[in-house]
Length: 263
Image 1: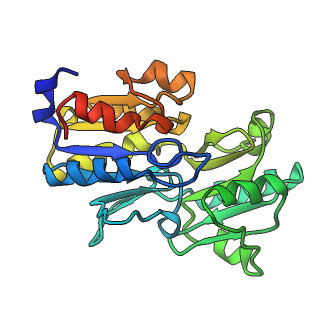
Image 2 (image 1 turned 45 degrees about the horizontal axis):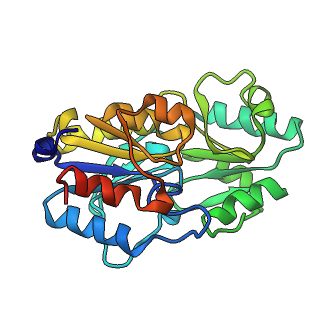
Image 3 (image 1 turned 45 degrees about the vertical axis):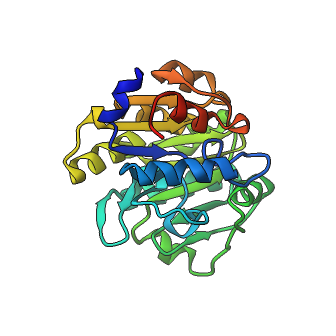
């Protein structure tokens, strides 16, 4: 991106884990806080895009995000209204839960209010711990799974993906951690969320920049005018991005924004 291209950027999308937040330290750095504040001061709309549900989206001191793309953008909202929602078909939710049980994997379903699981194993517990959450095993799991479900979370490896999605047409796996997966609507991803948000603000693709590091960020980077992969991103993300910035541990976003005149 040329330095003068910064004038076209009006909105910025950020993944959380591995992008805004160092996965090892699990905290946002003072420099990243400064970056977000300066972007906001420059009139750039700030959007957080995450696999987490609304109740798990982190808050950062002094930062007021404008838009939230939760559940890998299956539920997009501002503080005042819902921009877009895309729940998984009930029949697909039921099939996925049955498929998980068949391979002895407990599973958690998520709606806007929270998560409910039918059990827990180490992989699922460790996955929730990344977001500083605990798995909630619910007595009314069946009732919740038959309501609006935006995402399912299950501990698994890649070799289990096929079994989990057996005979399921309307859902897909979006994974950013090797020991677990998020299962989301087949036609939903962070890229769709970016498109819906741009439409909401009457902005064009070239007005958007996006930062990410995991495989579930690929569509988001492609939907933005400028897709930036973190230095710590997986190779498929780097291949899909327009440019690569520094590692999250090296304040990659801060230095990228400085270099290209965004702050």
